[in-house]
Image (cartoon, rainbow, N blue to C red; front, top):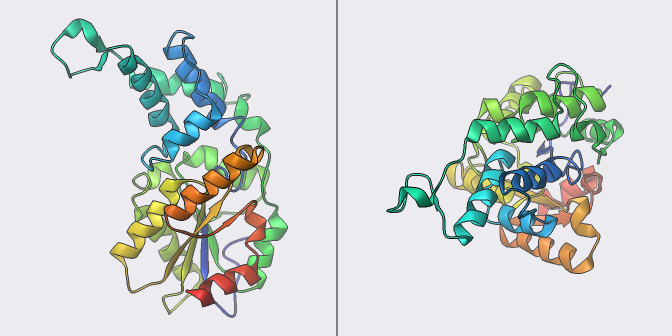
Length: 280
């Protein structure tokens, strides 16, 4: 099985991947769990569509799906004249919302109700890349790793459990602040440099499917301008079903800083990596 710690004789760039929407299709899992959660907490009055979830995500602030679910619930009730707890003049208008209970409900849909044997939506996520693709990057002298807003357990369910990767370099929810904070991205890059004994500041490509991912690259560039940073956008499968949605989503990623946008992560071949780096 491919390992991101395989010895690489010649280096030319580092590639770091987001997981959700890049490595696995989460339209029927994470996003379905968001819709279920909002539907539950609005008493069945509002179930957000994929387009509405995408619109929220396009704000670049809601990479965490628990927080995105809560935000959609809040916005629904605000439209009904209620206010978020702790604001407003009338306590009767406040909206009480137990965040921990919301997270538990979300997880019961995404993971299932048995913490030791997952049976939820996560079990049916289609993979968007194969181990042979990562092997091709290794062969081409491209160290790779992962920076994701998913929990470590959920991320490794895909990376180790589904793809069979051995100890992939990964920064997950528990390891760093949420995107667009680039701290986790920096940590992955540092670990890859240490693993491969990289002595020069290679260009870094971060591959993601959301505006927050592209903003992460912008913030990385601002913090460390001595290194070259690129954001590459991937169109999640659900937006490709309707041409207008695909085009609009791609334009949002480009407006947020994406150097290139692909329909599938495996289109970011070693040749494309070289093209992006040389254009920079």
